[in-house]
Image 1 (cartoon, rainbow, N blue to C red):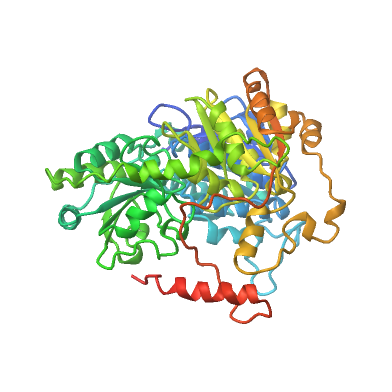
Image 2: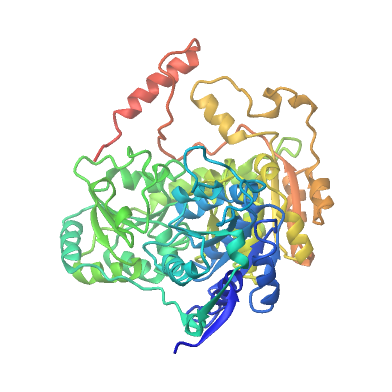
Length: 610
């Protein structure tokens, strides 16, 4: 007879979570973020309380930003560990959908445990239930289906016996990795079942390294060996696979330069001779010049997002061949690429062995030298202390204050593009950018998650005033928990990045900067006081020199430290970069729009379908 133990479904879930281990004998689920409501407080809340020593429960202030903290935690640890997040039904669950999409796009593990309606349908409709007039099985949690890699509805206690192993398989599978949603009916959470004791035995989840098919390796090695000007596009998969050393060896052995996506930045140190810098729309002239003339483009762990490829207009060589080394077949096959479906590390090693002594001429050092000569002055401290600071000057100040232990992080708005171009990232993991979903509001919660993942790191978060206003509530959580990181708030009075895009497409300045919004003249937000009210240490500085003085004090401050500086919304780094496909109206009364449309049509001619 099988030994059993009688537990509620919620108790069983929590017990199972605590028994799932990493290869380093740590719990794979490092903790659970929770805002309790009537859909999870009685069931999961009771179970989490009983296991609070084995599985810490953290209290957040917003369901979406709790998820952001969990996602950043996993991203910083290169998917080796993850966190769970639980909410009530209804709005609490719906708040997590955006974050689920973020984790999905970035291929990051996240365990979502939203409460759901009553499986027995007794109190139907229950408070906060979203009813579908044509489908009685639907609840608000069905919105998770398109943005998760695995979805299951737990409507019987024994469903956990199959759902939980499937969930962990997805979260620990490098090819399938992404968010999981176990929609947990609230009455079922409290129902008891006789679970097999063996179900809760400790299990170590090994992150596999899929090896490439020899035929694929042979094929791409033949393509590369015929190339005269190949280039490697390093994506986030390099970090997830810990393939930094393999990439360095591969590049150096064969003389192939690399360029970095937002997710791949810091794959090689910025000053490595073969690192030509950032690629694409927010790229460097050094990198984009090589990409435009490359006859072989080798993607390593990249999704080939439009910002990377210049909306598929960057790789201009008419005879270029596209190769994609990716653990996910979905990504490896994009745009007719010759696939090598494998882990980035073992894939590079296999291709490198097949290439033998093949080596190309190293690109001229003047490519990088010319790039830095054009942009380094932009980050210098200004001579005119009365002028508003630029974002580039802010980056320069933070760069000068940074050390080898610093992690620069950001997500949306102006700063990601400027950081991609200008930030000089050293060791792997020193640059943390959420640009797969480019989600405003990720920054503050994400900085907290990074610090929880690696408490020894000096975390500096860049955020604009617009994204600060979208999601700042976890500042209070960080203050409550004594989690230390630095937030640099650049206040340009609005959405400066999208305002420049609006202007670039010929549009009038409208509804982005506060000065061009209804009632904007009445807005006068004191971000330093706001952060202070939530428990942070904060200061408003009036110049780049004062910013550097404030940053020098960060090591002595416990908890979140916020430094606010007013910035100019208009300047951006002009050198580098390539076209980005943003639809411009065919018909307009504005001459500026018509001129932008003409330019758009001309750029479209260079866009490749293959």
